[in-house]
Length: 523
Image (cartoon, rainbow, N blue to C red; front, side):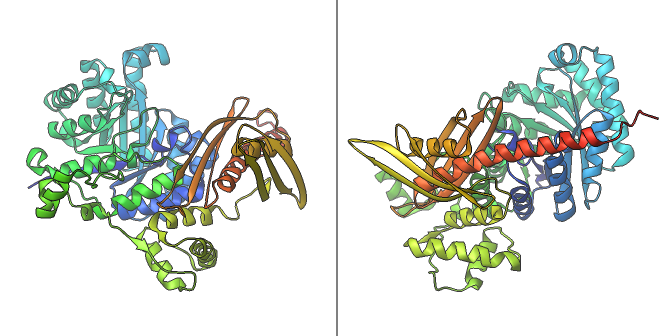
């Protein structure tokens, strides 16, 4: 009988740490619901002590999401662990995930301590966490660059302290599959109490081997794999959930292991993450890429006609891939729309339905066909409706041509007052963003990154713009989608501007509250 491997999804924590991939509170709740539909075993919802916003998101996910365990991350420090427990304690299956670096560079350079001192910090952290929570996971950060004998001692000690899961992370993507296999095998052979815990791995993709390393660890006996949807994450990203799950399922002959993932939700989850983060899935990405089940060569097509197994080792239906074209028109009812949205993983509250339906009708009026990808965008836009704005885009207009200098005009509104400004640039988007900078009084703001992509297909496809702006040391990302890419670009740029301004407003209010608060040390 196949072993069941636990899937620990860290899209909401490590995945969101990818530059430009941050999600707002509503998007995190939405994705957490979909991860529950995907049937992951554990959702790492965030790093509660890192910010008040992260704390509130982890707390809300722990309270609202049923099914998976909900984990929060914490350093092996009392303040981190206690804050993490505050966030997850009201969940039906809370987990505290605490960590400390164990490699030489972390012990000596980062902490300025000895191995014995770091070992004590690890044990103290796990002991405190276990006094608060029944389910505690410990991670030896940078484990694959840690001296093996010391790693063995750390693992044995934290198991003795009560850790039910011990994670062996390749934090910097340094390992090779055979090194990973040997390391996990060594621990199983040399840690006497290892049968009292679940060994986990968390692999980064800096050398492109994160999935291979994860599978090697499973082969060596690991019982949990930490991964993200679409492989997103810091630097080159994390091991890809969909690749690990389908490799285990397709090659049970090699691994004698499987997961309890509802694989038919993989495509929906992948598209939701792509839509919420703006991170485009490359066409040749395994499992979820647009070309993953496409066949163009004549020999391949002929073979497929005879028998799909000639050139496909998985069925597209197994991961939820269909040619779903949502053909309801602007006069179609809300029931059909709600039904399709639910199949895509969205639970729409009655009070939200009118807004979603209006957005659907607006798109359906202008398009020949409404695809599932369009519906993902509609839901993202509806979820951000009503969020606080500093500036609101009322109108955008461009003039450009072969012999004309591009000129952009925007009309913005703030606190009921309208501002009209004109801008110039090398192209229409540059001209429009110049007009926005002039209107909001931020002439020194830079556009650090800009991308636009087609959401679906054909000449009436929605165009999605993603823009990163920089003002001094601060960066913010804005997104929007429209049939008009200039309009989408202008709104995405303004969304980024608003994000910077709201962040500054929140910081200023906190500073004012801190100044007004009484000094706790004054008698």
